[in-house]
Length: 165
Image (cartoon, rainbow, N blue to C red; front, side, top):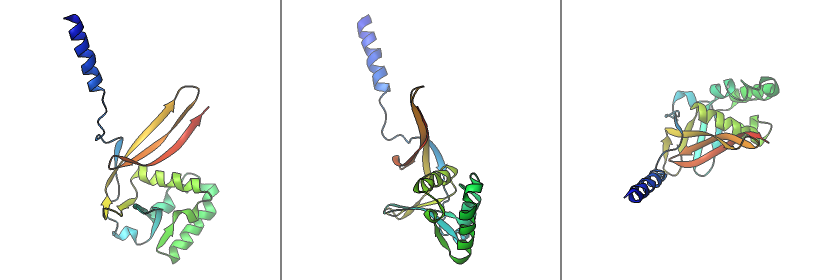
């Protein structure tokens, strides 16, 4: 009888450890829900591919990352963005970043803050909520960490923010 109860407990604990693939990963982030609002008269495209368009208001971009964190290094590019914003209604983030890697972390910043609008081109609708999972993998001698962004429970975007060897 003891063996039966032990076996039942072990079986139940393994059953309880099974991951449900329908569970949403990470913490929710509410994005800007109206892409036609007056705040987007002047905007910056942060990401654009066959599936999604992500943009942020120009004022938010000029006051945000990377200009607010890495000010001295980006002063000329910030000035360029301000001047271009006077002449154009839509700017593209890569025009104001010295390297492609900078666009990745800029996108991650605006996604994490929820200060951008995301449009699903296939479903032809706004994505109002995404999920972020901050992670650290590895051991004490070698590890890495970063952020993973999920849309509709699928990994959309990932950054590696820290590597330790």
